[in-house]
Length: 108
Image (cartoon, rainbow, N blue to C red):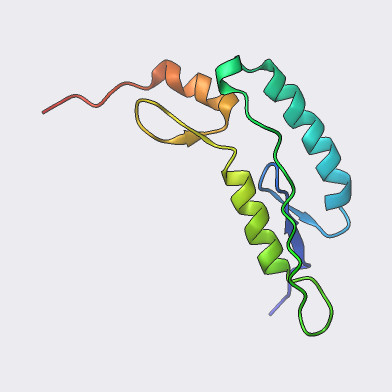
């Protein structure tokens, strides 16, 4: 069985990155997040995502990557906004596109 290298989930976008790449990705992702957030209508703008601090250290002295990734995933998912019509969740810029075509369910 081949082991994958360890990955860390970005707290902003929810994607996985290598342990060396995440420190390069996060500042760029946050800058992109700010640019996109500033383009949204005021009612859809969100507060800046905060990096979760997970201090769980295993017996060998390493950070618990599973706990760190779970906290980052939860943070990324909290950025999603529900549609007022159907309740599905989207990133705010995608919600605008979705709402153009979302129709309420017809009563039977």
